[in-house]
Image 1 (cartoon, rainbow, N blue to C red):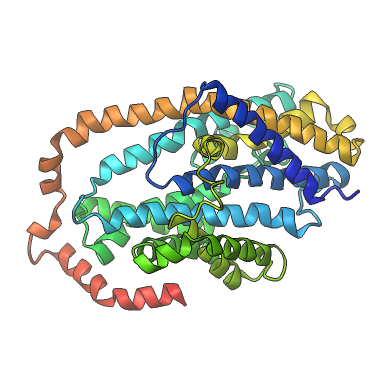
Image 2 (spheres, helix red, strand yellow):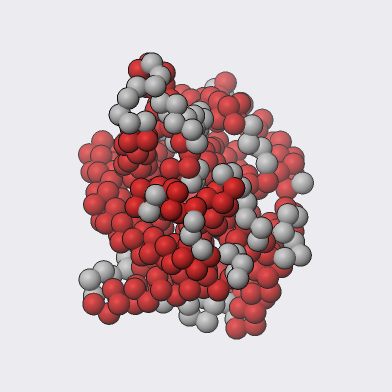
Length: 425
């Protein structure tokens, strides 16, 4: 039997959902209330699909010594398309915030505090675990100078924006996290771009100093990563969905039963005929995502409590699954024994790892992610949002007429249709 048979993915997912069903019935955990329930339900599946995607990478690595894509369109696309949809979700949620900014002005310092404490605590924890594993793999000895090791760690701690080097001479350090941190570069690039997009297209308020600081950061990220590619367009596709779901007839159509079959058809096309065709992948994925954002729950699956519970721990699943796989194959089983595993044995190990991953993810959500969110709320409440009206006046550059900064923004707004055209092309 092929190690990349779809039955293994279905079995792993089925067992995880069964465990979540038991958790649901025990009332130990209750899903949080969110505005877009179908999107919340979708997120968890996306993260788990990335886990399965990297599990097949591990099969290839154990048998060839190379971290390479599996010989399977399905498992390749499980990872690639899941990340594309993650970016669309980010684009959707924050373009939505921008579109409402005239009625609900955005306090940008508070926004960045919230984003930082939403992502950083678990990321730092992941880095600490990774550094601990590096120490074990290097037998707790310094193979490089302390200053070089410190530089390498700092690069990793910067959300991988400035690289993911090997640490202390341990080859393929990125395998410990399955290399998932690359997507956070795009996330932060988008966050830093939001105020710039806002002042040009939505007339949001931004302090001139903050504007130029963010512009410098965005240019720096581009310069160090050269990442102007189709992944950036996925954020815009998410922004497009914001406007599409405001069309009543489209919402009625997208949330209908026939639309569910259209979604399945698009997903099938993504796996086979359109694999590798970036343009058609974005078109099909946009159709799927917009339909789900409009309320299509795929016959109730995405609104189910089990799906919402899985969605609740998405970030933990995504960030920690590499560490779980690495620990299981390299330490629990051992690399030599793992290389001798048969197909069935390998997938039984993966299923066991998936159960461990879900348990770890709920713990990290409870004890790392949630406290981080509360810290952000306290900081914002104390330093920013308690003086909201005053801060809005302070950051309202539109009250200062004929300034040099305002002339720059006015010019950008005049050429914004052309900018939009270039992005769409």
